[in-house]
Figure (cartoon, rainbow, N blue to C red):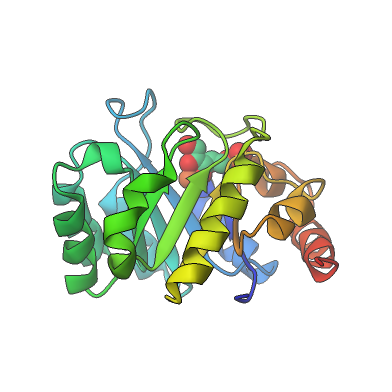
Amino acid sequence: MKEFLIAPSILSADFARLGEEVDNVLAAGADIVHFDVMDNHYVPNLTIGPMVCAALRKHGVSAPIDVHLMVKPVDSMIASFIDAGASYITFHPEASEHIDRSLQMIRDGGCKAGLVLNPATRLDCLEHVMDKLDMVLLMSVNPGFGGQKFIPHTLNKLRQARQLIDASGLDIRLEIDGGVSVANIREIAEAGADTFVAGSAIFGADDYAATIAAMRSELAAVR
Ligand SMILES: O=C(CO)[C@@H](O)[C@H](O)COP(=O)(O)O
Ligand SMILES: [Fe+2]
């Protein structure tokens, strides 16, 4: 099993003070920055784009930036986020006409590539592209908004995805996104996740460091 990584979603940060919020959450012990990109087309919400990613790099953020693209089509945004300093770029298979080509584009740009599966999207779509993946991201809510409730059947899907990844022998992270909190992170890790996106649970707390420390202590108890 890989090292556990905690990835605060800046969707729940105070956008008016974004640089400071990212500095604070990294100082509080976060490992990577989860960056949600929404286009009001693939999902019914509109957020931030490559200029904001580049601005965070210019501000001095050196931690990995995990760009979750909820845009359709994706290829032009992949190119822009490679230039903007993304570390991971993940997209939804429904948003690309040529999944294999989009994944290759991300790797050719020097970033780590991943696919994001919605709660109702089958794991089958991973089958023919496993060797092009650095990350599989399972959504445990329908994409578009922070602060939603974790969908419990995602735990079974996580177990199945963990088996697929382990059987492949490839170096692929298994990330979970949506409704993750101190209360459920241990159960989610026991189902197979190694990378945990948490937006409202971290940015909605008064003390980011205490919340991240509480998550780590739950993860330390994983069987
Ligand atoms: O991609 C998304 C939502 O579409 C997420 O990254 C959310 O931002 C997670 O927020 P919480 O459920 O942790 O509040
Ligand atoms: Fe996300």
